[in-house]
Length: 551
Image (cartoon, rainbow, N blue to C red; front, side, top):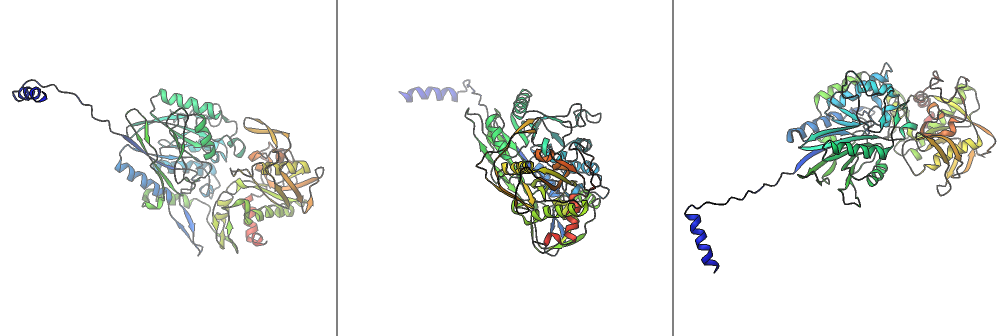
């Protein structure tokens, strides 16, 4: 029966009968955008490396990343974004011969722009020299766009309104097309910037509310894929992704985490997962994430993620020349002493270099002020070069790289209880290596028991303003070998930054403050002790005298 029905149909076709044409929609091609990422680069443009012979060589990682961006664009015109996860305005390239850090900052970001960076986020170290320096640096940018949705600078020194920038000096969000994908981007700055840097009167908005508002705004503008440029740290990135679904990719920074594989955060409501990336620090690696998106805007594949060495690319000659130009404006490098043992700045918590630096601060303060000094106290966040320096010559720029902040040595007199509160703050963060958490002390001994009760603070605008309950984690405290007496007074040599309550050291802020010349000052006086030696100068003097090599 089937054969008799088929033959007439074949005859009709053969005789030219009208044919019915069925329209077939071809499958929509998958769209792709390649994200190239770095974070916490700290202006390590030249990639200076010192060999065993003491000579410096330069690897020019930024120039190599510029070449990587050009090569990627040649293969995928319009399908590549180069992104930065914050903390650019820091490092050796701020140590100019004329001491003008505002000029140095204004020179740094444009070099990233010339290298092809598209978007970045404001990091806490951008504010090390205050919002006015950030403003001057932002005024030199035109294509490289900085994002910070939770930063409210209206009416402050960082007000985004500027005659030369109709779209504002920085923005909360951005919408861009990459590889045919409408990508929405927004940036978040860590709230800890309030205590570990100088925000001035700039305000920070709550993270979760800001994130939800940014997602809503970008989706309304037509964004298919959402990328967060985060300077929060990888742990906070995970928490935020779990709390607020809808972020497709987080390009992270702040914690200096080298993620060999993208972290996948699943959501219970079956929305697409969030992928988190981070590349370490100081141009150590270049991240590559290949986003694949279908016709409906669903992220099909974000697992094509890898870290590569910038050395895989021949440096762009234009960026090399611009880097050399900035190098010529730096403080000249010179040998100031030698080290007979390696300086392991990788492991600050157990570094003999760090302890001896605290000792050098205490001895210098006692020598210059003629005051009895019980010990020295520095914070781990003040040690910035995470490098192992082998035995050999020491240069001034090496010391500046380890201690880049212009912190000055001061004296703080504390009661025994206040000193214990200081150590409680350090012990309370003993398992959290975020910058500014731990103390490096000399002359003081303490055992931290994190199983005990931590101190409890009252906070206003993410900043501690009062101790509501003393902690009990600092155990077996001794000063100069003697048990701590809570009612006795002790004088500690430390930094003006910490004495003003920086890095949440509220107990130091509550003590009695004195410059090394004997003048008292209030914690909120940022101009006090202007003639006091910088920490980097104190360490340099100790190196020249051979004091850091003494046990």
